[in-house]
Image (cartoon, rainbow, N blue to C red; front, side, top):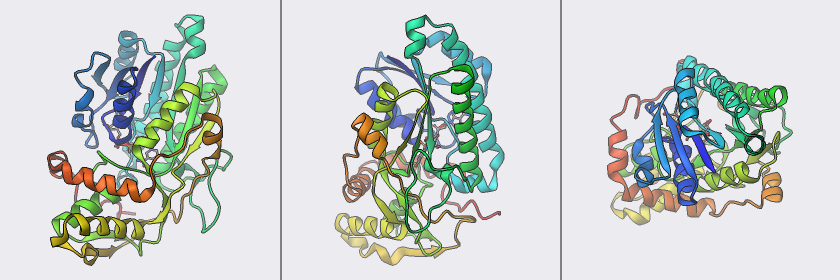
Length: 348
Ligand code: NAD
């Protein structure tokens, strides 16, 4: 199978690309290389004969049509997106452009390609749209999201992802494009861009700088190790049922403050000279409209596809801290990028 992956130079996309190449799939990685991208994320597969990189904007219909024609993929896994909620508060336009207009443009290019395939290849073709659980809004202290939860997005980011989910679904219902949608909880792990909670906590603690925690740190997320997400996504594109959606999560709920404290404890053991790192925790102004809690009931993908997360949250956080300690050259470069280290999202 040759897979066209969009956003494969980003955090989750690169995990998919590395794993897909390791499993022997052909991969063409289409990425615009925004501030969030990093070709170092896929350096380990860059020389592989089964891997190709195409720098392109998914909104550019001409470029995307040329890429489909040149690479003739059997499936599309669409991850390209503007992904940072705080940035979406200050500048929602880029989120509408890439996440909504870009998804529309990609669906159209995929449909044109799919219609030109032979009947067996048309039947086997998949358009897998990768989305977030944030489209479902916020939970109170109890309950979980699943595939039947109504959409109620609260941020410009989640609204743009919700719109893109609906477009993907509509292209399945209206044009018969073999679409599958997945909605996943918060990811963490190696290669996470240093503007998100977990890498920020690790890198600030290492540098002896304040570790910003929004509000009182009581917001709850259901964390999934990124490599487990990549495995789930490849299971869905191979064996998922067309027209279905799958909720994906790690069954690992934690409050932000507890995540940060765990990271501090791991660092206390690894870098005792900075201990206790918890002294660096600084509560800062909360995110406007901050969703209180997300949690996923992943029983459908577990039962149908036999997928389950392979690492616990504690183990995943230990591995993540160790990865950042071992890969300083990777994150040092990114800390000089525009906006990193600043606090976006307070313009509401
Ligand atoms: P990311 O920001 O790390 O990577 C996004 C990638 O998309 C970057 O490489 C970027 O250059 C590329 N991109 C952006 N705009 C583009 C465009 N117009 N054309 C081509 N490429 C473009 O994001 P991520 O955290 O890896 O998330 C990947 C996908 O998974 C997104 O669709 C996101 O909504 C979804 N998701 C993320 C999480 C999470 O916790 N990070 C959870 C669930 C779902």
